[in-house]
Structure formats: structure tokens, C-alpha cells
Image (cartoon, rainbow, N blue to C red; front, side):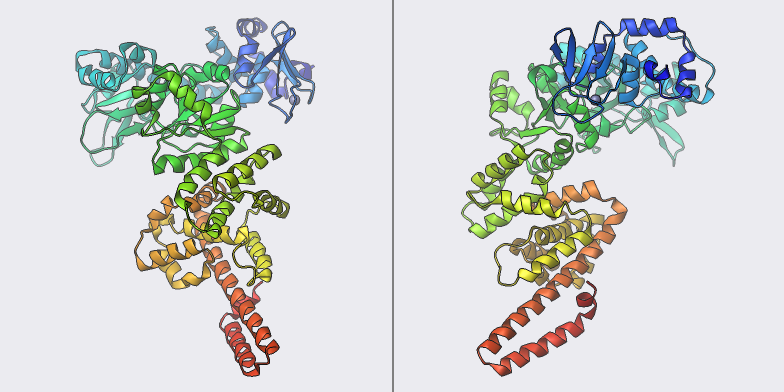
Length: 615
Ligand SMILES: [Zn+2]
């Protein structure tokens, strides 16, 4: 019985009982299950029902069915099935009443208030209040924009190429310059200071023990969820004074920036239709694209793309086209976006815009069709990356380009599909002018070893490689390079606090890669600052890996482990080298030389007994 209802526990059954069958039925009837499910799963019409890939189990051919007539869903692969409410419960991990409320709200049906569950009710009340404050503030900002005092803000908006219609459509607003405009009217409207604080709209000043408006003299962009509710705000400053150019609401009970994308609420339909989503970096870029009719664009909210973003986008499409700024920061952001998106199973392409700094500027000069033409030609992620490295490595010796080639391996290992792995490898090789250099073989070898996640694993790998050294010179094991790159990347932690320690601990010779050794030398000499390492493309995979795999507090330990590993490797290589030379000397009959080398080996071993023995 409860299985049939799609209920998993007695508790859920009890919660359900709080509402009459009649009201539940009304909500179901008023809801189009195809469009609700369609927001999570791309659906295609198949006969009388709709088909898609099941969101509850992993599959390659669609066995997930949605029936509008039966008002339900069923998966023939994993057996999951239910109605629109149970679907939302599963997808959003919501209890029954919340799922019901969400759908009721969407369908404009008022639910009777329930008194039973006090705690739920209290939390729900807080959310409701926050929601009401946001709606209130959104209206307030909009009214200020169209009022007399909004003149400068309107001029600015217009100056950026937007119209009055845009302001209405996207509910653009203006936060007045004073310190308490919103605070005063908000309180008059019945919101308490603590409510306004928890909505992130006012800020508390400890010294003066007073509250003031967070957004002042700013153009305001409301951020909405998929149900057309304002959950946060962004503000662009209108003054030249100090202070950040862009300001976002802090995270609140309603708003998590790692799970939100600006304009996604309006872009979903277009994303589905066009088959891809354009991801841009800021409010104005997203607005500009929408303004010019490219309504499949969304923007991140002052944060890097996360795996939640990846999963969110996967609901609507399989392809992401990055359209970030053409500068170094934009490039780095694309690289950082790779992992969360590829892991969500999304295909990634990168738009390269000639001679302009961002999509906004491009569209001021060209047409929508030009833009879409560019999108069509946008290279896949790896081709794009190889192209940007190619510029850097042009004319450099094969070995150096080979090293660049190896930098790709950790990222290629994350591609879930074999066909895409092959495509990535050949794209990279052809861009770097290193055809048939067996990148695929290197990738496959690495894959067999398994994806190495911990420092210890990496050290073992490099030990294995050091057996083959020193004669096999030009190609280093991937693990070797990764270790060096990770170490350098970690040196940017804590504002470079660890650099003096590292310089004291290691000599530049521990680095096998010429470019890494040089970077370390320059760091030691103070020729470059630790934060400049952020701009080194070869280190980018390491930054990404570190960011994704280790918590901040573990990074110091990681750095120390890596230093020890680098040192150990260095000593081992030296020993191997001495041993080799000794053997050669013996072969050549140079007994004296052989003895000398043997002595050196003993000394070296003694000096580094710790490193050598602690295998
Ligand atoms: Zn299934």
C-alpha cells in the first residue's frame, strides 16, 4: 500500500495525512507532470508518453517514462515510479509537505495552515518571512529605479545598452545611496531588524552597534529560483568610490550561491530548445545575451562553478559553452570549471571571441547571428586549452611540448567516455604539433594504475619510475610532474607563508621539470611572488585538484608530505646515478673512480638515512 503511494515510511504517511485527499488531488490536477519532470530530465515524446534517461539510476538508453494521462512516472530499468509529488520529494530530497507546498505555490493553490509539527512549522515560517522580505525588497528596489532618484541608475543601465523593457522584464532595481532607506521602509512594513539581517539586506556594525543597508547606491539584479521567487540580490556600484564593483547577498536560508545561476529561471526553456547552455561570468554578460535574444545564457554568482551547478545544468542539457572573459582570469575560471562539469557528464566547449574582452562587448559590435556562428565553431575544451598553450610553446623544442602534453593527463583521466578520451587526445596532439605521440597510451597506462588520490600513492608511483631512471631522461612519469606541480601550487596557500620554509627545505635540483625548477629558483630569489604562480598554466590542473580534493586545513600537511617525497626522490635519483657511474667506471676498469663513487654513495646514504630508508 505505502509502496503504491510512493511513501517510504510511516512518518511520511502521517505527514501526508495532515492534508486532505481533496487538496492533494487538486494540486496534482493543477500540475503538469511532464513539465515538472522535464525540468529535471530532458524528455522526448514517445507515443502517448514521454521518455528520458532515468534520474534515479545510471543508464544509457531511456527507460524512464512519464505519462501525462496517468499523471505519473515509471522507470522500467530500476522500477522507481510514482506521481508528481513523490517525484519532487525524491529529486529535491524534500519531505511530503514541502514538496506539496512547492507544487501548490506553483499552481497558485493556497494550502490550509497546519498546526501539528511545531519545529517544521517554525522553520517554514522563517523561510516564508525571508521570502516575503525578498519580494518586498525586490519591489522596493524596482520602485526606486523608476522614481526620480533612480535617474542616474537608469542612465547607467541605458548606457550599458539596455532598455526600459529589460528593466521591467528582469526586475532591475536601484538601491539608494543613503545608509538606511531599505531599513526604514522595511521596518515600517513590519519586518524586524533581525529578519532583515538574516535576509542579508542589512548589515550590523559592531562598533557603532547599529544596522545599515547592505546595498547602497547600486544597480540591483534580483536572483530567482526556478519557481520565480527572489532568493538573493546582486548589486553593481554606481559610484567611483572604493568598495567592490559587484556585491552579492550573503548565503541565507534561501540562497546558496554554489547552487544558483543567474537567469537560469528564464533560460531553461531556451537551453532545452537550443541544446546547450551559455555560461558567462557576470550579471551584465548574462543580461546582454538575453537582451540580444540569446536566452540560453546563465551566469555564476561570484563563485567558481561547482558540482552542484554541473548537476543543475545537466537537468536541461548535455552541453555547456563557456563564454568567459578573454583574459587570464577568465581562462583560469574555465579551467576550474572543467572538473565539476565533466563529472556531471556534460560536454564542454569554449567560446573564443576575437578582439573583445567579453560577450557584452562583442554583442555591442556584432549581431546575434554572428555570435551563434561563433558558438557553432567553438572548440571543445581540450582543443581550446591546447590552442592556448600552443601560443606559449610555439617554436619550443619537442621535449617542452611533450611536457605540456603530460600536463593534460590528470584532466583527461576524468573524462567518463572512451570516445571523448580519444577525441581529446588527438585534439591536443594535433594542436601541439605532436601527432602520434601516444598521449592515449600514456592516459591508458595511468588509468590502469588507478586514479591516484593521496600523496602516498603518488610517491609510490614516482618510486616505481625512478627505477627506470636515470637513463630514460626526456620523459618523466606523470606522477613525477604532478607532484612537482602540486607542490608549487600549494606554495600559494596562506599568502605564500610557506615559501621561506620550502626554500630552506629543498634545493631547486629536486625538480625534474625545467620550468618548475626555474619557478622555484625565481621564488627563492624573490624574483616572483608566490601569488604569481596562480598565472602559470601548467599548474592549473594542480590548483583545480587541490581545490576539489582537499580541505584547506589538510593542505599544509599535503605540502609537507610532498616536500618529503620530493627530497626522497631526489636522493634516490642521485644514488641511482652514482650507482650507474660506478658500474660504468668498473666496466672501464677505473677502480679508483669506482671506489670514489662508492664512497660518495655511502656519504649520501648516511646524510639522508631517513629519506632513503623510510620507504
Ligand atoms: Zn531508473
